[in-house]
Length: 90
Length: 433
Image 1: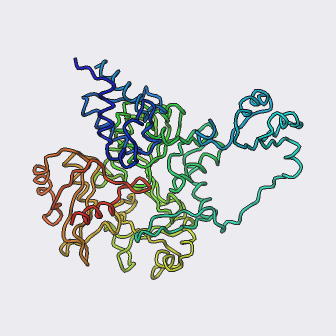
Image 2 (image 1 turned 135 degrees about the vertical axis):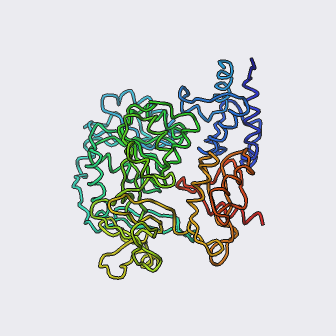
């Protein structure tokens, strides 16, 4: 069984979104657990969809947001915790 | 709290106003607080000197309300649409345009006060007017998701117990990819309305599984003809046979609206043939704001007719007998390639079928004076056996319709209304050269 660490997910997200992060002049230090990808203009709804697909492919899991709070959907710490839990259940 | 959430008004009742003192006392930003049920607001005013407190006494004195009845030919709203030249055109829609539309759909959908309808379109896109006025006509609830809630439309439907859902079809593809179209996922929906772009048969099939109790309706209409001017009810038995190239018909004109299908000389084409859709009737809007030139180009009286018709720029097939209307594409999606008339929609339908990819766009490229000299295709997929696909396409289409290149891109750009942006794709090709 593979174990996915929240930090690994975080690194993946940051590298996947490297160019919009750079365009918005955001340093990696600023991207803490409560960093909101949508509020900070890093992703829109389509960007979100592509991020989800990328996470699914990379970690080999299926994401199902039904049980996730809508406010948390674009908060980086919440996504990481969620993926970590999903991977454990697999 | 208020400033972060972008909230501009808070509704409190007189009972809770004492507790609210504590909350409002902590807000430095000057607020206007209306207490229409409280005669004496002196005490609250003293406690909250930084805010503007308005009680019942202040309201009664100088605010008698008599609704003003607007003349039917006055403007209800002006909606800007993107023009083909890139300069937005302001479409003037009157009360008289809007009323017959609302009367018809309120009855057709049997709108009731218990209904809860989604308002998901941006206010700059005219379906939003439909999504608000339709429920309001019968005192039903218009439910507006936040930008974030729209990331998970399925949760919004269930959390808010929606009974009527209205969105552009691309939202359904979005939900499908997020795994949000599970069997029976949306049991509260009684009606689902799709509009704004061609509705694919597959989209309807997936939606029907997820919303088993819901009727499904496809609407069509340019802004100039007041939101929606044709309608089609999906019938699981009959409709699959009525789809054309995998696209659901746009159906029949609203009551009072007349249809004309014409060639480029504004002569009606024979039944069964493809031509530009023109429509006349009460929903024909007042034209473009401050642009009489563009207005007279698009709003015309065809030879031998007396009524004013709007040229939609959309290609439809003129129905045989009482068949529904079929949407074929934009007049500008009909191109001449090496002198042959080509409809990009037909190429896209074959591409979708053979590749299994939903997000597909074909564009003419490079452009020439008379059209284009070839076709290029864009597919929303990261990996695909392009050689194999080209072989399959070549077996189904004549050579001049087979795309010269297949571009695999992670996302096809959308315009501000959530539709595929052909021009942006052509600009990508332009930038390449």
